[in-house]
Amino acid sequence: MLTYIDEIRAASARLLQEGAVEMVVGFRQGSQPMMNEPCLIRRPEDVDTLVWDSHCGINLTNYLTNRKEKIAVIAKGCDARNIVTHIIENKIEREQLYILGVPCQGMVDKRQIAMRVAGEITEVGESDTEIRVQTTRGEIQTFAKAEVLQQNCTLCTHRNPVLYDALIAEAVSEQTVDRYTDVAAIEAMTIGERQQYFQDLFAPCIRCYACRNACPLCYCPTCFVDEAQPQWVGKGQDAVDVMTFHFLRAYHCAGRCTDCGACERACPVGINMRVLTKKLEKDCVNNFGWEAGLSPDVRPALDTFNLDDPDKLIK
Image (tube, rainbow, N blue to C red):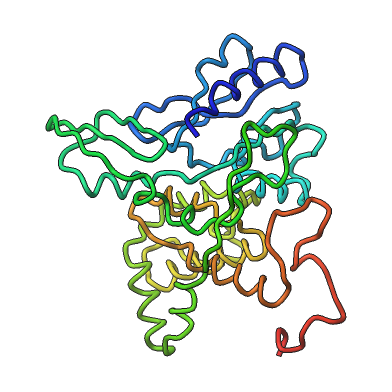
C-alpha cells in the first residue's frame, strides 16, 4: 500500500487543477505516531501533504455527510461501502463525488502495538510486511503487519472498493474467512452466561460516545441519548443505561453496518462493541442474503417489503 501515495497525489492534483472537484478528502500525517488524521485539500499545491499507509483507519465517509461541494474522496473497501449507504440514504449525491478507490490490505491496530512495547512510541516506520516502532526508551521493535491488524481487517471480505471512479492500484485478492465465529460462540451461551458476558463487556464504558461520533452511520439530527421528551435512556453510569445505549445504537445500524471498525478504533477503553453489529450483520446475511453497501441501486434489507420474507422473523 505504501506505493499508492504517488498516484493518490497525482490524481488529486489533476482533479483540482481541472476544476473537476472543489476539494479532496484524504489523510495527512497526524501529530501522534500511528494516528494519521483526515484533511481537506483545496489547492493543487497542497497535495504533497497527503499520506497513505497502514495508519489510515478512520472512515472518511464521515466528512461527506450533507456536503454540497463537488468532492474527491480517497476510499478503501469499507469507506466505499459506507459511501454507498450515504447515497442510498440521501446524505450525498453520487454526482457530487469522484471516488479514488484504494485496494486495502488492512489497517494496523495501534492499541495492540502500544500494549507490546515499553515506553511511549516516538517513531513508526513500515514496509509491505512489517511495522517498526521506536520508543522513548530508545528501543526499536519490529512486528509482522499481519499480526497487528485491526480485527475487522483480518475478517474483511470486501477489501477492494465496490464503487469508484478511478482505482489507484490493481485490486487485491479477497479473503475467505468465517466472519462470525465470535458471534456463534455468544449465541451458544445460556441466557445467564450471555447476560454476564455483556455486563462484563460494557463495564468499562465511560459513556464518552466516541463510538457514536466515529460511526459513519450516526448522523441523526438528535441522537436518542440526547432526547428529553421522551427520555429513552439515562445519562448516568447505571449498567442498564450503558447497555441500553450500546444495544439501541447497534439496532440503528442494522442492515447498514459495514464493519469498518471505526467504533472500536475510537473507543478509549477498547470495548469490542462490534460483536453487536456483527450479530445483526449475520442475521441480515442469513435471513435476507443482504450485505450492506454493495450497490447504490439496491434498497437495504430493512427498507423493503417482501411477501416471501420468512414468517419466523415476526413471530
